[in-house]
Image (cartoon, rainbow, N blue to C red; front, side, top):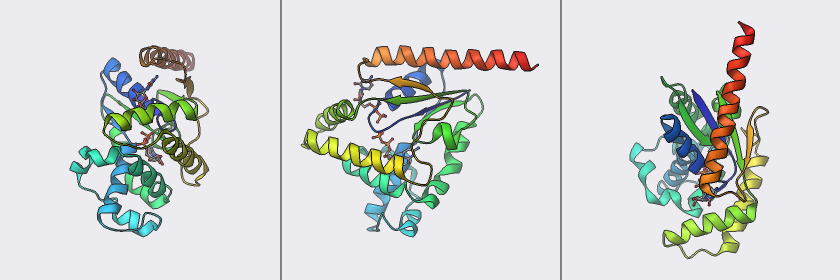
Length: 216
Ligand code: CDP
Ligand code: CDP
């Protein structure tokens, strides 16, 4: 069983994907971390994230970079959305994500293009959203907890800039898959959002099972 969870920055998709993975006992991949690792590698190699060849050269990052706390910074998120615009960077990360999705037993993946590009045949798809102000408040709280002194205004401006870049790019833009269930977490607690996410997944699985019975 493959579950695809997409949505904009700080919508709650990672929290929901992790909870779904636990509920269904599936492995989980936060695909945003891969783009953040490329961005961090670009920085370390002193390359230019806006140059495709530079970003591609940084796509071959060491695996332990995925555990680096630097990947969680606001800056790393911004730079990740710059490197992720390059089609060749997306191509370099595609196989790894597809392999994870198609492992025996299935998986939960969260990102921007899981339901549209990485796993278009996923058994269940969610599109998680929340207002930019609420997402900024949540992300600001997280960054502050980690010791950052960044202002709420800066986090909101960065989230808006990232939304524009992620939805406006040519390569695998952030769009809702036609068959995704929408989950607006703006006014939901994490617990309520997870319950709703499981309901949406169950409904999609039931519809698929009914369609398969009808076809046979
Ligand atoms: O956690 P948050 O939503 O803030 O960001 P993330 O999921 O770590 O993703 C960082 C950036 O990587 C995004 O702004 C996207 O530009 C890019 N990304 C992507 O292009 N495709 C994905 N499947 C996941 C992330
Ligand atoms: O993965 P993404 O960037 O979409 O968001 P996240 O890391 O799952 O969630 C961002 C922050 O919002 C975390 O601190 C979550 O605990 C919080 N959150 C929330 O307050 N209410 C929700 N319904 C979902 C997440």
